[in-house]
Image 1: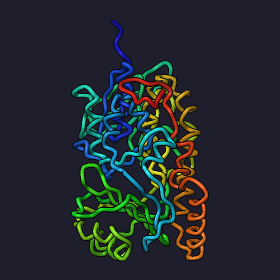
Image 2 (image 1 turned 45 degrees about the vertical axis):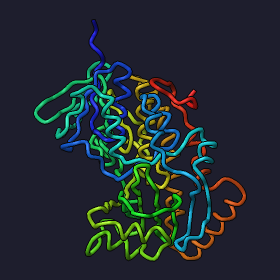
Image 3 (image 1 turned 90 degrees about the vertical axis):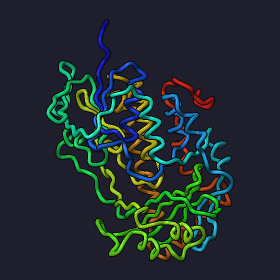
Image 4 (image 1 turned 90 degrees about the horizontal axis):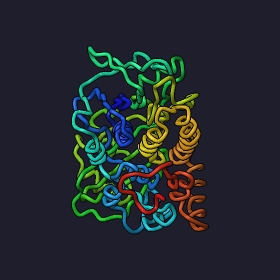
Length: 391
């Protein structure tokens, strides 16, 4: 009996694990190499739109993840004083895109993806590098510690500072600072009842969302010099910047401890790559198309990448053709939305808020319109336990 084709995935984040699971379902023998000592994801939570949920249907876990949906009733966009600029609802999103928006802890998704893989697939505490991308006549080679491994396919899922990307495209511009920094926290907030919302101020935004497990996911972003950090702690910095904003923001900050707050500057790939593959090696997720988080699509696009890659198998040119135009367009839209939300000019903010309120009265909320052409994506094939809306 012929041996199954072998794939090595470099990076054990959401995109890497989804790719490993999708390839495994297609009959590949897969090894995941993760340099961290454990699969502990960076980031408090992730929002999964219907496009990513359909990709997870291919892996057989879409329904399980949908059951974690917590957004109910009205939500939308607000000003720091609490005025609603635009309203939307979970029901409206589901009707528009054929499914819900699901917010869940990143660790939950990582655990579900890892559980799809055979024991021993994931090797943690393993630093890997691409030694040879391979070609039609020879396998790709990966150095992992003292070992050198050969594979029919190498997947570079090693994040925004991808070493695989640098090896494939030396001399290409790397990630650039987007001009703003972010904070995230995932905590219980006793007695806090509120509608899910994002709030836009001058050069600052805040989002607060309830999760099904009873905790609250909150995030903030503000224009700031790259590398700047609070002189005391990041909770104190959030209090200075957002402490007088509307409910439930003060309650969230009161419930937080300094150790609960994660802060990261935002970088993105401003110049698209010429391709997402070379030889037998392919890139996905942030390694291929890192984008600002303003559409919440970074992880979603990585999951899409994974199932499309498995669909095309060794035809990596077809994968690039399917993924590069779509992800480039979404990344550019994310940059535009980030500029709109993060503007610090007082007059521009007034014009923006007036326009948002008027547009909301005229049709679906900006929150929903911004997902047109994104959340309605469907995978090229279906497998596992899929949702009725995938066909």
